[in-house]
Amino acid sequence: MQARDWLSQRDYLDLDAQAERALRAAGAAFQNDVVAERWLDEAAALAADHPAVLLAHYRYYLYKHRYEEAEHFARRCLAQVARELGLPCASDADFSATEPRVRYWLFGMQALGYVVLRCGRLAEARALLRKVVELDSTDQTKTRVLLNVIDNAGREETEGNGASQ
Image (cartoon, rainbow, N blue to C red; front, side, top):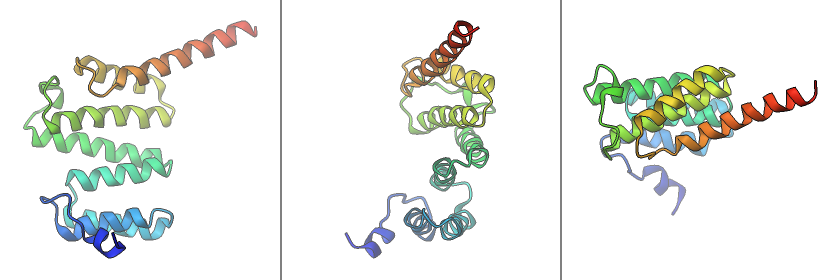
């Protein structure tokens, strides 16, 4: 597939075509922050609250290790899907359902927990991830694995500190 064809490809029929093209261009320009962020800004100007635009921003900042900015977009993703589900609090949803927006919220909450962890706020990250585990009774997100890794790392660190004293 030629680059021009790829840029014009449509995967999100509910997203403005120019916004989708801007997201693709941002991905192609990932190594050049100025250009990539200009494309992300263009997508946001056209469809600021579209899940694909919010998710693209989150991923961009996550992969750039700009965790505070990634956190901002993870929180926006969660708020947007809660509005779409018509819930005062998204945690009121049926989390055993396979409905895409519910799964999006669960994965968004997991993503938020991860970036909060990367920001160094371990207790808050654990609380967020435990909430996902609590709500995700069928473990669709496999968050238990991430939480176990964090908990085991904490135990190993504590044991290591105790052994050296």
